[in-house]
Image (cartoon, rainbow, N blue to C red; front, side):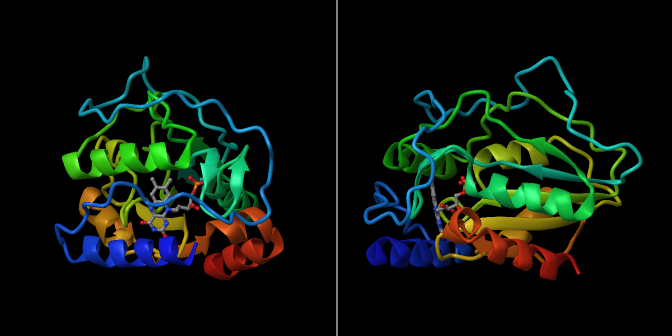
Length: 235
Ligand SMILES: Cc1cc2nc3c(=O)[nH]c(=O)nc-3n(C[C@H](O)[C@H](O)[C@H](O)COP(=O)(O)O)c2cc1C
């Protein structure tokens, strides 16, 4: 596990520097996974990295939005096999996203790729790396109109030192003028890995506030601590 952790951190650094060092075949199996939580992973079709773009569905679909709020939590998260947590029915970022929504009263919208990422960790790592190296913008299954919202809490896992490519699909198809984005991520050692800057680049016109980084194991297995970290960030 320590090897994998160092790999993530080194890889994130390489990504920040724009290095071409991202030649690793996988981000490493989650060996020695601690405290597996939840036996049944959601089914994930084997995904091909694709260069397809845009939204695959009929258009904006309802987020869970309480009336009268001007904030929304938009997040991507993947259930299945993951680093340090085993198989989970609910992804680590989803756990944190719910905490943010609970603490703020904001509605929620989940970014879902049209073609699900593999549930297996190594397989997902391979797909994600191919997408990143190819600059893919995988189609997403549904969309939400963000026009009514002043603040967007944006949650994602760190993938290969970056924001997952399907999140860029979402970001790049909306008008962010005048909006505040508060990015939060879960990770396995890389922290935010410079992704607040990447989000700012993808969202011209937005004010991107200081981000929050929570380890996936904390989100999944130490929920009180995760909730405290969320509260501290929001305060
Ligand atoms: C494809 C892939 C790439 C990953 N790359 C990194 C990484 O570069 N740095 C890191 O700290 N963690 C990395 N991780 C670990 C995830 O960021 C971490 O497990 C996160 O909490 C997963 O969130 P989720 O359950 O919401 O998908 C990676 C995981 C996957 C599946």
